[in-house]
Each structure stands twice: as structure tokens, then as C-alpha cells.
Image 1 (cartoon, one colour):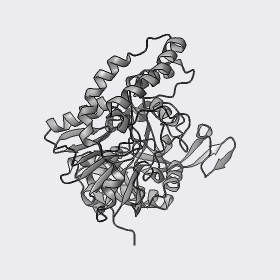
Image 2: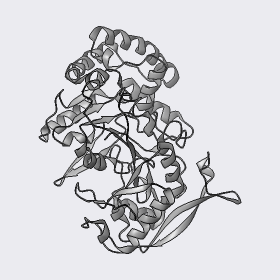
Image 3: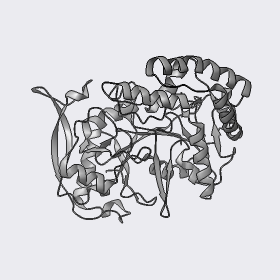
Image 4: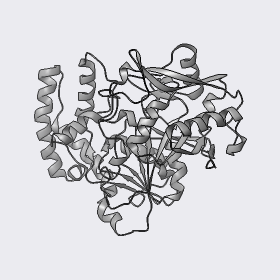
Length: 422
């Protein structure tokens, strides 16, 4: 079985835990877009692991984890992640971690450019300032440095010098800051290239012959951070939706069987941009505190709101979702009343569909009774409180896509399989 797993909201849906759970049945776990602006968290036996570039499937023995060509790689961050995992007793080598030679490399000038652009903007985007956008910009402008260039000292030096001619001029003339020394960067980053070289692998050659392998493609961020279909310009710099999985990995010969969408039982987002169901006051504090809603990558507090089913229905369509995993249901445990958005109001008219400009949408809610009891220790779906099952079934019916799993806590085993409705 070959599957793609994507977030259906603005990221932070709990994809790391779900990938860790589902990859038991997969041989190869592939990250196909984004960079270290992602943060996937998995808790195993009380130990918390946060992944920024390496697929969380690395925690499972016998799995091959892949960083595809659609990912932009910060060499320092990747090496730090590899080192930290090795110190935790996780075996990592070129046998179980493979990096596409066509990944583009994030350099220090990308990070500086990211920060300076955000600082200069009249209207802030809320970038993580990790250099993701400027690196993708260089990729499209055909001046980027790929992994295959990075591990070849001669080509790397040539491309580095070419880039700094342009970048340093921009830093000095536009932003009034000092640029970078080619010699200094070259010496430092050549050492990083030597460390990463054993992991570099032509993925299409390596995976084409063993036809019996099963693949799980791991998306970062969430559908409404997609560069085309998200709340532009408050989006990430890559295509995060499921159809990009094969393009971002170079594994077009893999036949995909299903797309799995992951959604929280409520909604969050980090950074700027429209958010129709956003809350403030006591409910915002409740979700942040109870749900530990702080970014795994930046530590920034997340904006929180009620579940938006209009948003989710659009995500289900864009990704051609086969099934849904609902996460963090337990965060709703203490609420007496729970709301979900079922329509938007635009000016004086009610709209049930999805508008092109989300900033004008006002939510219309349906209210549910809460269950006011803990679900964290429940492991069988039928044992959930009746109001919780009513809530889940309504979501499933509204979206027209089956919910197959429900997560009720951050622990690896805190997940329930939902029976098919008969």
C-alpha cells in the first residue's frame, strides 16, 4: 500500500505522530517538500523527538527515510538533527537515510535575506526566517545550489562565488548590511558537505527496481499554507498538497493507493493571515494551555480557533483525500460546549462554499454538547463518550470522507481505530 499523508489545515495537525504510527506498514518514508520550517513531534516512552527535516519514521527499525528533491536542506540543521538522534541511540547511516542529489541547499545568505525582507515589509507575512523562501526563489531563478553541486568542491565554489556577487550587492545597496565572504563560507560548508555526502543517493535509480517496497509520502505544513491554494501571501514557499508527492520525490513510478489527511479537532495557525474561526480571551488561553499550542520549530504561540469544516472540505477536495485522521480530540475534554463552522457569511449573503479571499469570511457555527470527561486513556472507539462520537460522526458526514483514526493524546499508543459506519 502506497499512501500520501498531508495536513488539512495550517500545519501543526500532529502529522509526526501519525506518520510514526502508520509507517509500521511501510518500507520507505519520503519527505517531499518544505524545509526546517516544519516541526513534527513524536513521543515514545516519555521521550519527545522533534523532527525538522528527517521523516519521523526514522524511529522505526528497518525503515528507509528519504529527503526528496522538493525539500530545501539547511546542512547545519540536518547534521544537528542526525547528531542528536544518534546520541539518543537511533541508528542512522546511508542505509536508512537517503537524500536526493537534487535538493537545494539553504545558505546563510538565504536566512539573512529572509529576515531582512520580513523586517522591511509593510505587512508582515510571519516567516520563520529560516531562509526557506529565498532558497526556493533561487531554485526558480536557476541560481540555486543543489546537493549534487554542494558535495562537489569545485562546482560548489563556482556557484557560491556567482551567488555572492549578486547577494552581497543587494545586502549592501538595498539593506545597508555587510555581505558574506566566499572563502569563509566555502571552508565552513565544505566540511558540512563531507558529512552529508554518504547520504546522497539517486532516488529514482535506487528505488526503481525493488517493486515490492511500499511508500509513505510525508507532507510538511498544511493545505492552506500551499503556495498556490493557501491564504496567499501568508503561505509557505512550496506546494504542500498531495499531488506534489511524486514530483517532490522523483518517484513518479510509484502508484499511489490513497491520500490520508490529518486534521485537529479544532484549528490553529502560526504567523499572519486570515483565520475565520480565530478565538481570543478565555478560549484562546484554554486551547494554548491545554493543547500546548506553541510552534515546534519557532516556539511561537499559535493562534487558536474552533474547527472549520468549510476549510476542511476544501482541503479534502484539493488533496483528493481517501481518509482522515482526527487528532487532539482530548483537548476538547473539558469544554461544556463546542462549536464548528459549517458556513461562511460574506457581506449580507450566506455562502456554504469556499471563497477565494478568506479574509472576508465570517463563520456561522453549529454547537455541540461537550463530554466533560477524559478520553486520554481510552483505546477503543466505542468507549468514547457519546457526545464525542456524535461530534466525530458529524465531521465525517459533513466532509464526505471517512475518519479512520482518532488521536487522544501525544503518546504513541494514544490512538483509536474508528470502525466503518454500517
